[in-house]
Length: 63
Image 1 (tube, rainbow, N blue to C red):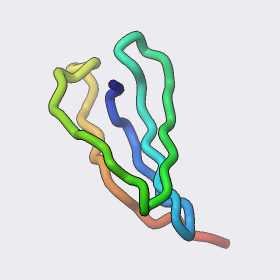
Image 2 (image 1 turned 90 degrees about the vertical axis):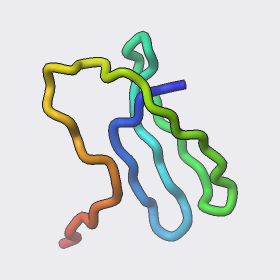
Image 3 (image 1 turned 180 degrees about the vertical axis):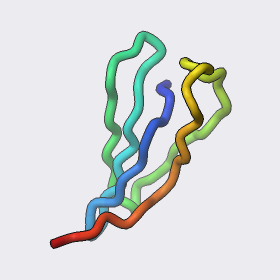
Image 4 (image 1 turned 120 degrees about the vertical axis):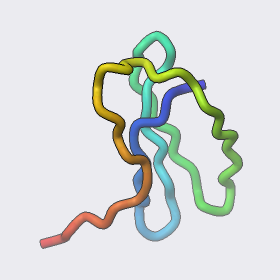
């Protein structure tokens, strides 16, 4: 179990879930889009004083 901080899409078929464990260790789960089976559940925020970060996909501009 980990707190989700970011998600990334790696063209053409990988999705990366980035976050931290309850102990603060960084984790990254990389899965093929055909194999995704993930349970999302609400947890208390680890750092409630920090502003909320939106979670989702965003397009990065390529040069």
